[in-house]
Image (cartoon, rainbow, N blue to C red; front, side, top):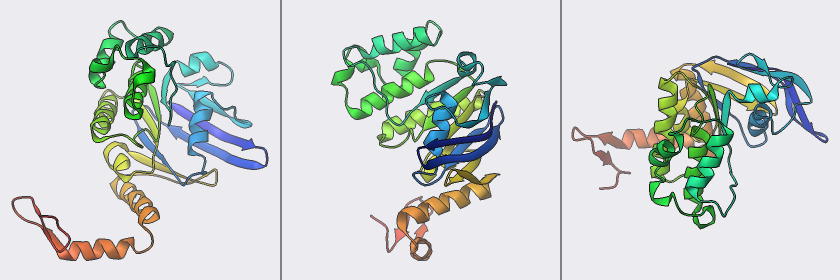
Length: 258
């Protein structure tokens, strides 16, 4: 579904991507992991066409994105970290414009208004939306077209619990329908809920590319250690020895909250 071969990208003297090569098959759900500055967002931007690789090639659905970019990118939809929409359009008008541009089916706008919890906001101007409401609009825009490949750039960051439930539900529906997902994240739960495979970038190169529950848990653990520090393992062991789950499902122990 997606193939990157020897992709490089530099901004001045800073080499962001250094020969990235990877292949993602139809139906996979791949987490692209790595520290800030490792090249995750630049990789997505090169796939989408918002950045042009200095060398290498990208094929989407077997179509060379450099030689036939419009046709290649008809196969994908992109949810960036931050989206900007015309402030004077309503939510419904925004979705209608995108639906026409992406040749979405006639019922797509109403479907996404309902699915993303936007029906009460349908006639509200974008300028009147909160940050979380705008992110739900961005989710609806990304899900409007029915395509083969969906790209999410840290989509779960700053979402409230209700919006997270919508995102995960829709992403799981895409997986069940055989669509392909490629997403960046720093959040272990995203990997656990969505990923069938994880790719780790470091300094613009692929450090690891593995599949399976054990490997995914290892990456979750590495992310947790980065967040909580080197004493994370000791804290987990201490909590495990002090706490227990009783038969009624409630957590008991020294660290539990009644």
